[in-house]
Length: 245
Ligand SMILES: [Fe+2]
Ligand SMILES: [Fe+2]
Image (cartoon, rainbow, N blue to C red; front, side, top):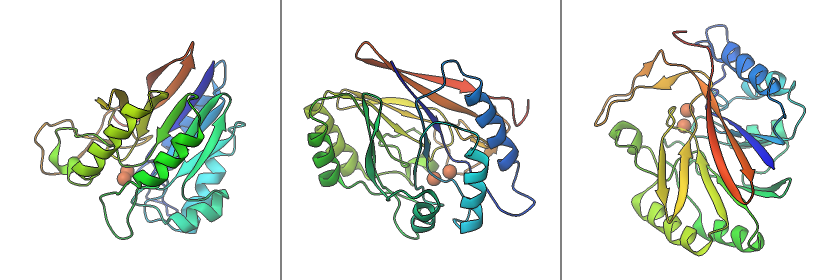
């Protein structure tokens, strides 16, 4: 059994008014530490900082430090991926082993843009290198449409989602594609593979199909727990006390 916890969209700020981001992350970290068994690794799927400066990443490291397991981070559109890489000592995109699971962390942010881009050639090479073993693909921008245009407009382009779908049909060993960015939990299927998005550890986006304006709502924050067992993978949503609780 392999367990991967996924925290997302921390949006930490180094100044005093951080909209509760630091307190919320402390709550999430404490909840992960209460799990038995502990996860084998933690993935943080982007937007660790609000502005993407070094002070935010120093704070992220400090708040995540109680977690004894490996922490794998990837950049979101709010992050400065060079500052993030420097703080956590990881490249922008990479493949990591989590027990018998292969985690392929993609880099999707574009400089100065809200929407993302996926390098399918790089991903294909990483999937080939995994040689049929169980894989979880992680990225900040989710490769699915949520039905919430204000979020879908800042996602991945249709041709990249289609290209990923074609790739996933060739690699049935990919157990899940996991993402963040939309500050809600949503699930879809692409190329026969489940795609799930994580909630934010702090602020959640309003559920309004067709919404063109972005709004945060006082709904419970949370994290995902991906559990691989007997060749399958189940993704749990763990809600946390927080805004509005
Ligand atoms: Fe975010
Ligand atoms: Fe984002």
